[in-house]
Image 1 (tube, rainbow, N blue to C red):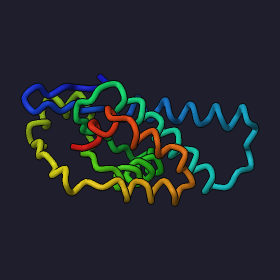
Image 2: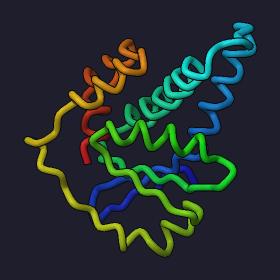
Image 3: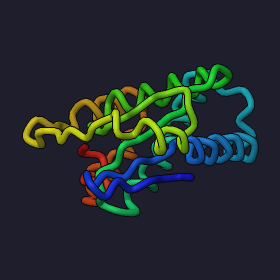
Length: 156
């Protein structure tokens, strides 16, 4: 299951895992097809962040419903978790991390993660813009700040 829409709160819960798998495959394909075998770890990290953000943008532009992103933490994906956490620390959206599957979360624990609307007057894109600048990904900024569906999706 990729997503679940909570009708009572008007929030769409998104399972990040399938999208992260796509981002990883796209990144690997890009590295292989461009023959970028000897790039630095920093550049590889920035490429991974770029492809993850591209998937988040894809998710958000599909609808203007508020999104709450769910990440199933796994011990063999620690570096992926660090990247995802780095991204969501800069975005004004809800991010839930747990060890159980998305399906179990939706069935059992979703009601314990209550929807709390954010005061939209306190939301600023400065932290996200600074994050993109620090990662040399400023070209992605317009995707997130110019598209209304994306802005409405991320403001939780």
